[in-house]
Image (tube, rainbow, N blue to C red; front, side, top):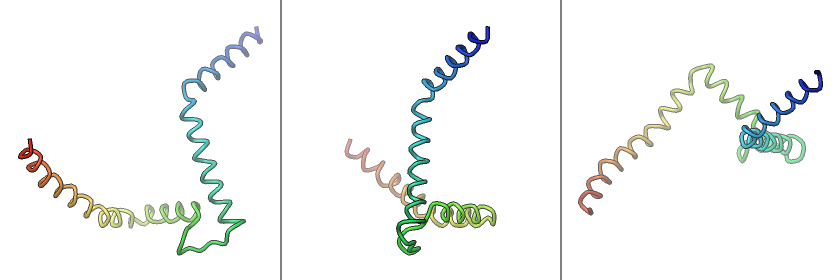
Length: 101
């Protein structure tokens, strides 16, 4: 009976992998990318903060901004040009599109 249970567990794991294969492989690829980026700037290439940063420092800065609340101020100052540009594109683009037919 233990063999049947083991076989069922293996079939369940195989089905889970088949169902989530793309997500699992995508997460593995992203993890390998970030680990390679971190390792490259930690051990092989000297870090020049003006050119590129390590993922650990980027995520640490994101965490600190989220913790202090500064992230919302920064997102608002970055988002204003986006929303004004999108609004202008709607106000100008839709009437021109209607006129053009």
